Image 1: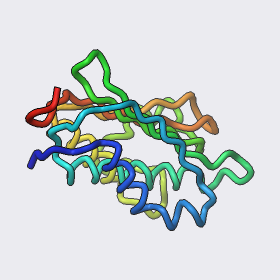
Image 2 (image 1 turned 180 degrees about the vertical axis):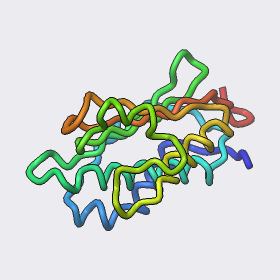
Image 3 (image 1 turned 135 degrees about the horizontal axis):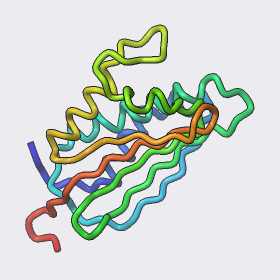
Image 4 (image 1 turned 60 degrees about the vertical axis):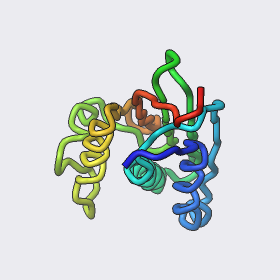
Length: 158
C-alpha cells in the first residue's frame, strides 16, 4: 500500500536492520543521497528489496579478506520522473555468465542459499512499476544493483 515515504529515511532503516552484522564485519557505508521529495511508495516492499540487497552485499564481501569492506548507497532523481536507488559493494563480483541468470528463480552461487531473494526483489520491483538490474565488471570487482521506478510525489509535494 502506497504511503508518503522519505526514501533516505527508509534506507537508513534498512541499514539499521543490518547494523549489527555490518559492524561486526567491519563494513563501512557511504551514503550519497540526493535531495528527494516525499514520495508515494510501498514502504514494506521497498524495505524488503533494500534489506535483501544489503544482506547480499555483505555476503559478497565475506570471502574478500584484506579488500575494502564498503557498501555505497546512492539515491537520485533521474530525468525528473524516476527514482534511482543503487547499492554498490566491493565484493567478489559477478561473472558475466551469471549476470543474465542472477534474477532467475532458484539461481544461486552459494551452497547454503535457496536462490529466491533476488528473484523476489525483481518481482517486487516490477510490481512497483520499476526494474531491478545488476552490473559487475567481473570476479573480484564488486557489483552494483540498481532499482529504477517512476516517482509519485506525496500529496502537497512538488
